Amino acid sequence: MKLIGWITVFFLGLSIINIIAYRIKAIEKISFAFPIGMGANSIIFFIFELLHISLKSIDLIIGIELALGIVLSIITIRKMRPVFSFELIFKKNVLKKSGMLNLSWFFFMGVILFVAYIMIRKSLFWPIVQFDSIAGYDFVAKAMATEGTLNSSIFNSENPVYSIRSLYPPLAPINFGFAYLLGHTSSQIVVLIFFLCTISSFYLFLKRNSTHLCAAFFTLLLLITPEYAAFSTISSSNIPCTFYTSIGMLCLYTWFTEKDQNYFTIGVVLMAFAVWTRTEAIVFAAGGGFMILLDGIRNKKKIPLLIFGLACFAALALWQWYIKQILHASFAQPVLDHITWDPEKLGRMFDQIKHVTFSTVYFGVTILLFIGMVVLNIKNIFSNRDQVILLISIFSTWLLYVAVFYFINTDYTSSSMEGWIFSGYKRGMFCFLPLILFYSANNKISQQVFNKYLSLP
Image 1 (cartoon, rainbow, N blue to C red):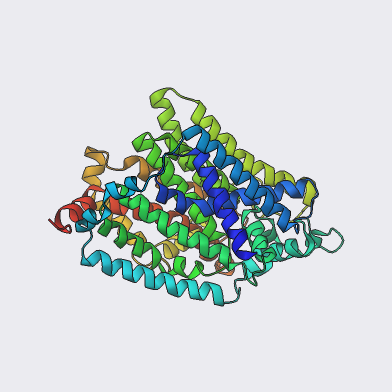
Image 2: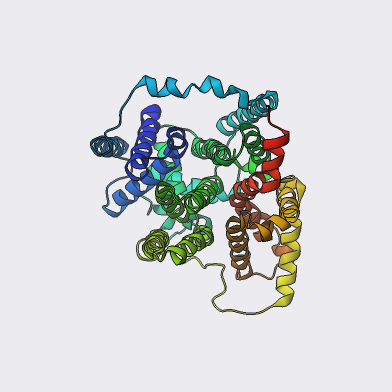
């Protein structure tokens, strides 16, 4: 059952990609398939929930998803009429391109595979220990798998045992519960899949504009970023959200620069799933929306921005409606209900943000490298507009993200330090890591180093 369930999710994701973005590369489809499949899986479970059908009907759900995947695949085949031939593979003659790969690439790839192997082992054989998961995402997942509904007894008004951690959007808890329904003893298989898909997808985006060596080097930097590596083996919603937000932004940036509509469609889907995973992902939707808005102004098109905005808003509004109308959850939100100006609070908050952001204990050299690259490329940024749209999207998203923490109802004294900046903000920074490393790899100076000095003749 486990194997059948995950194959079905993969097949569903692949069939959705083929129907909405058939022209992207096959290897990209493979990297995107599981995350998109799990996003669709959560929507199907949620529809079952609204129809009051037991979510424990795992055989029925898998059957419906398999049938849906088959139908979408038939439509794709009839519409695109693909030609399957081994000649197409051999004509590319990948072996002739091996000159692009040098010993350094093999070394970096070896380290990547070794580190990934260690994380896989830890993820599969280490119990769930994170408090947020035990009291939140995994708690909801276990209750769902036991009672067959999201509206489980933990939300009972007479004896509620839920917390604010239980009220995050349902993509992660539903897929965690799906893992339990398939017979897994831990939900960490879900996080592991997202982690592997993030690494592979990030490599593929790097390789679009750089060498294999450059892609391997910066992928390794992402992989060994200390805090991100640690959380990649912990059952939480941060790693799934990192995939959806960062890869979604890179899809939109690829669409913006290459005018390939397929990446716009994938980007919209991933961003909507990001908001369906964690509410604060809406700030990344705003960053992605900036690129769509700018393109709309240039080309006098309003429809792309409208589609993007409706998709993200629908994901946000649907879950808020469910919390209020179905769960009747009254847990107080830790956000101020009015705008205030408190420079002392802002100063304390930025002191903590500065400590976390530039800490090599948390993020290694990743953020420091990004800042260094921005400084070194100042001339190219202003004279050649080198990656300027990506930079604006990153910094504007980060400012919005910081603003969210300012409006949290806390004074950021030492007693409140651990709960927000040193926990929530730190984990949310995972979503920025692929974006800032992408810039670090694709600016003019890095491209010159890897294409001119670190490539074989």
